[in-house]
Image (cartoon, rainbow, N blue to C red; front, side, top):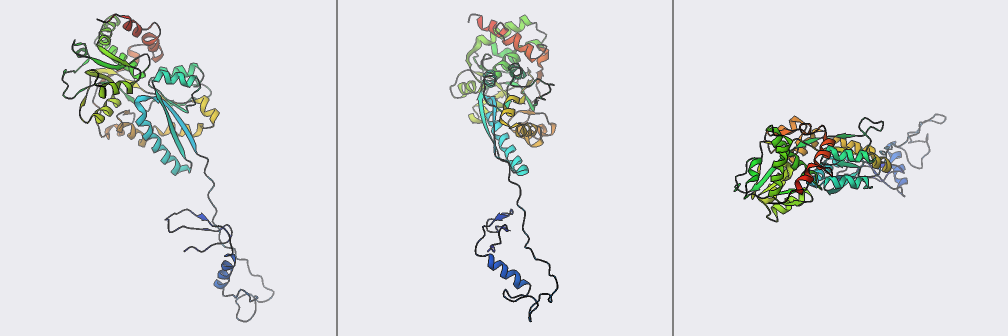
Length: 389
């Protein structure tokens, strides 16, 4: 049993196996400590120094004071911090796992507790919500053009600005096809989606970042073959004639396909496709087209929010954590293509080679692509304006 100590003394709690000192409250046991100390020196508690039988110094000598060793407690840890990640809804499981890994690591290194909440939805709507005042510490949106929207409304500092906006692309992805078990319609590439008997489900480019990825992937497939914008427009118009449901978000489209039984093919982000395959217990399969889009999903620290809340230091620590080997392995585990080659090579599920077309093959930049394809007078609106056959 531990011996109660003098005020300020610390003991180790051996019963709980704790290795950190535990404070003990003072009490009447103070006298017992004095007795034990004197006994260790061979003195009686009532015997003055220098008398017979004592071990004290002779009269007139000076005896150094004996002070019990007192452990210095560690400084109190900073108060807990909660961060809100604002993301598109095909990534919710990923951020749960990344948040837990960071929290455990940060607590071990600093003693400070960090917790996470998420706001999920279509990426364009999430960007608007941040502009309208949603208190997100980090924006993990579908497309770089979504971050440009945050710059325009003043939520993010411009890249290269004096405020030093923190943003990175910790992983990439691509668009794939999700089909029923056995691939009964024999879907292999983009032209197969135009077969009269094939029906398609997709998120809507109006409301979903993944929906925009799907539209751009289809366009890129024709462009890669040397097709003109007119030919690409004709193909995409035919494709959207085959789409029976345009859902508001990627997760809603996946639920419609898996749970609702809608369609023969789902246009899906690679990570979402594998998530649905696991949920289906083998009733779905992933098909990789020959050509797809190079998807770059950026993550940024939301300057206006972290500076107001005082969470910048922790938010930037999490932001930097996304590039560590531990985080990169989590991206790979969740079927996002990590930037780290070692994490990609060690992934439990391989990443098939696909020709992924960068946005600069379709437009000057992501912002230019946003205007060209998804603006109020963009090509997607022209596609939807065509009467259905």
